[in-house]
Length: 194
Image (cartoon, rainbow, N blue to C red; front, top):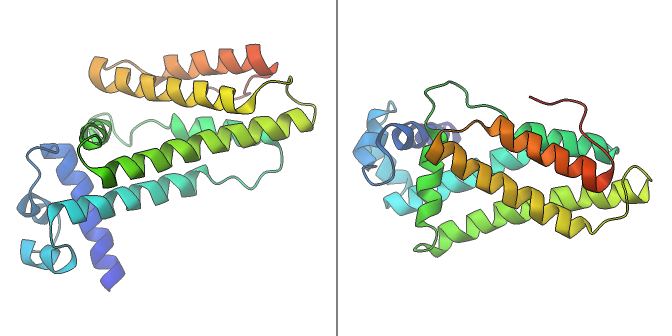
């Protein structure tokens, strides 16, 4: 029951962030998105910052579960990575990308937020670098610096994310650029593209 309550609160936090944004997020607005009272939410989380820290952990855990790929083929692992990163929003009116950008904008002022976003960035780079390293060893990819490739790919993803949120551009263009870069540098291109 406790886990279900916390998960409900975290899902309500996502909804409230999408609807109201970071600046206007309150415990009451989160409660309004759930079947719980703000007092019940305060029972689990003392402050909004505590709740947002837990929300970021929840989001990161979910993202890492999606990134997990047990496939031995490094080409498949890169394809899985790109598919996860470029999965479209659940619905066209889903403002989660904006809400997440608002949280990222708080990272320079909140060490705990920054730590979480650094962890996501490091996980993404490690996933790409490991797949590239394994692909080189298996003879699938050209000999390149895996860390340099990973840094470029993740930096491009982050830039594309900003362009999506601020300029409302499609992430499909960013994915095509990354795929072209991987083909040029690795001598390989993903088979599936959106």
